[in-house]
Image (cartoon, rainbow, N blue to C red):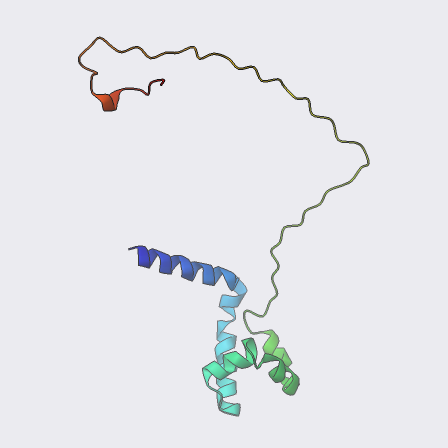
Length: 132
């Protein structure tokens, strides 16, 4: 069960790192059509196609096949996503207010445990903690 859970969490992390969008799911048909085009015209396998569009051969493929640029823009997972939150703050030049410190006063404990006279509560596990 632990292995299944760790596999599922790893798959979820991998899926989230790809940052899929609804548009990407809708463009999967375009991906398959373009892969079929590469298979017919260039004889590429699907792994070679993925390498040409998403892997190590991407830059070379973009430079040599400029005529397919419009088809490449319609492929899924071609978006750049930056999900960093923007943090804004304003420096006004006014000094920050000083914090007042509160003196802490040690108070003596006002509760001491006394043993019950009843035999009903004599088990040690059911007793509250005692002061040493």
